[in-house]
Length: 178
Image (tube, rainbow, N blue to C red; front, side, top):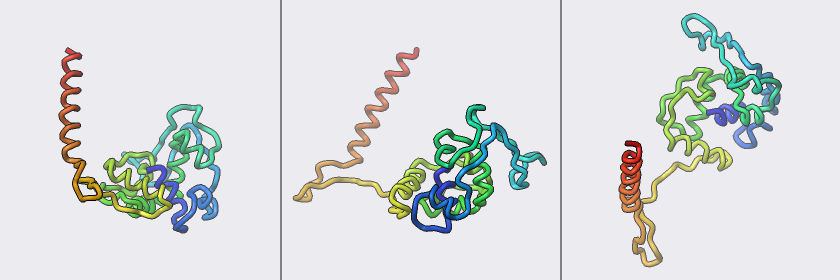
C-alpha cells in the first residue's frame, strides 16, 4: 500500500510522478524518520494509548526523501505521511487504482500493509501506476488462436497440467521430509 500512499500524496493531480507532484502539492519532499515515533491521532489509539511504532532497525532513521523512505522501508515516515494525506484518501486512491473488493479500513497503519489485499488487486493497482494512472481492468486469457481461429493453447489445459506437476512436486517434497 505504500506506493498508493505516495500516489495519494499527489491526489490533487491526476498525472505526473508521485514524488515530484507530492512536493508540488505541499507535501514535504523530505521527512524526519526517527527509529521510533508516537502518533497522537486518536484514530490510532489502542487500549486508550497513542500508536507507537518503530522501524525495523536503528539504521533506518534520519531524514529521508519519499523515494529513500520507500527503498529503506522506513515505517515512521510512512506513518506520518498517512496522517498528512488522510487515511480515507489512501483508501479512495486504492479503490481508483484497482483495489475494489478487499476491505480497507481508513486508519493510518494502512500504509504499513496491515490490510489483506488480494494478489490480483495489488497487481491491478501496480499496473495502473505503471500505466501512468490509467486503469485497464485485468482479464484472463482462456485460449489463444492462430490465423485460422484454431485454438493452439488453452490456459485451462495448461493450468491442469501445472497443477498435476505441482502436486507431484509437493508429494516429492513431503516424501523427502519424512
